[in-house]
Image 1 (cartoon, helix red, strand yellow):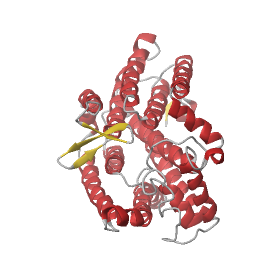
Image 2 (cartoon, helix red, strand yellow):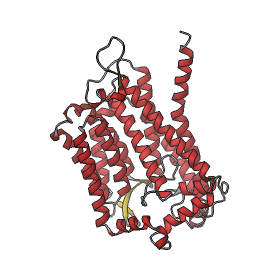
Image 3 (spheres, one colour):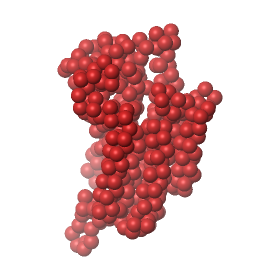
Image 4 (cartoon, helix red, strand yellow):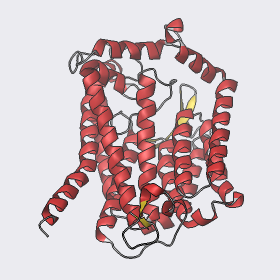
Length: 405
């Protein structure tokens, strides 16, 4: 009994890591949006704090979204999976209609309702996460058969096709990677999964090679300095920001690259400005916070599997893959590790839809944790890969079969 207080203290500490990492990223985001956008906002809108005020407004909406999502039981989210999928597909179709979808720089990715801009791809990320977590929980026993395995493949292909029509190649990569990881954990056979991954990789490579501007991005990525004043301009300016930052940065607010050298400095390339002003040390702090957030979500996966709540486990796992994957792509693009893609840095970049959806995912994670702590009955009837993975099973003395941890 004397060990109980220490165990509770340890659990409380680990539980605090999830909100701590998110709040730290949100705080860094507020500071960096203000710093990275001040010159651009002054020049375009005559108000140096325009983007900061906008970011804070969306952050308030995101907080309300997180609160709302956290109040809805997971069982209701599971029942809403098909309506959410249809709603997201409807938005992805509507945004393609001329005169309705807003076109910027050749991409039609935004809808405007009552002065509020919505990016359907961000909504689709949330809806697809809920849908596939519910679908795989109900169908994981049948995923060994091609007929059932092809259902999520077809749905993913339809959503990816709608996104490519915008075009939004970055969202396709994030959503596809998340769904493939969830399908694998949900009970799909290894040969099926590897075949699907290979087909998806070949399809993405083919689309990149067939599209002139995507092919140019790949060539520029290999040698950005070869065309530094044209197709390689954005990447070279980002690399200059990293170089100027060195170990500890030039100081908050002292970035030169944000002074109209680096496009999208407060959105897609905010990490480059952070690296310039905070240096390698600041960049590693942000990377560490994302690692901490991902580990906290994976801890929820383990606890959900221990209680055989597979819908909660798949939701938490999908969130971990999606957030970590998008953060990796954004930071990889800014540092020259990956070809240029238009993706925001979760919880940090300026961008209304992305910030609101990230906050909604936080609310969903908090709901998962609350139900895992408060409910000890009502186990979901399911099986599949969860009960077979050695990482989730162990043998106790006197027990002949593996027990889910």
